Length: 181
Image 1 (cartoon, rainbow, N blue to C red):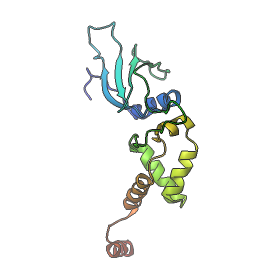
Image 2 (image 1 turned 180 degrees about the vertical axis):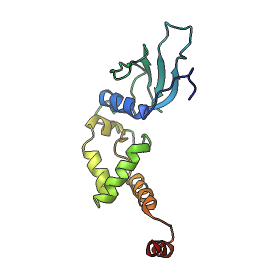
Image 3 (image 1 turned 30 degrees about the vertical axis):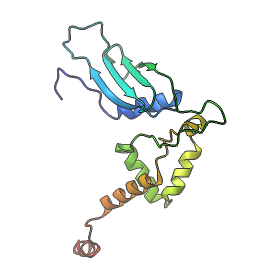
Image 4 (image 1 turned 90 degrees about the vertical axis):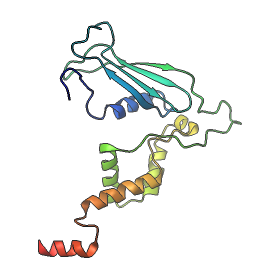
């Protein structure tokens, strides 16, 4: 990282999405733009950080951090939502959107989910339905089931976790390696 170009570190996209999801559960926004003002920038009246997240079908959300955050202080993020949500059905006769939309399961959250699947000895389908039961009804009606990925995603994450635990992909060679140790 260059010193003249500060960056947001950590899993900031997931953190901001979780806060946005609490207020606007129907749209699975994905961050498409992020800009942090340079340290020696002459544009002092501009915001410190600006990010844009878009829903593939309807809204665009602009996130702003106006002043440079101090260490160990809470950061205030202003959000402007442009557009109207078209996911949820307007009446009971309308059919909700059937196309599956969602965010990817990656990073630390993917590792933790896979660890839970392997150690609790639960199935990906049971985990899917358990996560689905904890979702807001507005999000489920709109088709935004981002917090409960499909059983195939859970299966793949558990598979990758078990593969990392192995010494070698070949079972015979792994047994030989264990006996040598």
